Length: 159
Image (cartoon, rainbow, N blue to C red; front, side):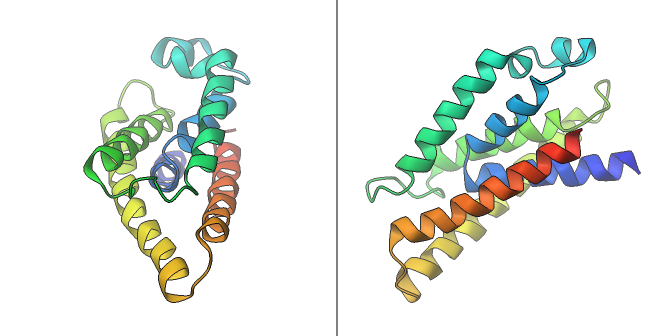
């Protein structure tokens, strides 16, 4: 049962990475820095640090602000999508509680979910702004709210 939950958590972090590439590792690092185990510190030394969690949080905040700019490239552009895939893979692998195995599988789940989510939320944003004529800032804030709610839910699943 625990593995099934880990699969959904890895997929959830991938979805979050597809929505906001830095929000996924920021939420994960914040949760992992709360009470890291010795095994977790060895497996993911960078993500268990409170300093890293704070820095990722600031970067994620910057991403939330920058996302509203018309100059921001589309999330489906190759370099941007690549960053989202890497974020989904890293956070998906970290969602695995079995540190000795299955990390590659969880990384693949996170990466695949990030790709799918990037395209789904690109379409969602396009629908809101182009078809429904919602201002870009408002559409971005809707997506931010969804991303923050998902991140909060995912961190509770890790406890």
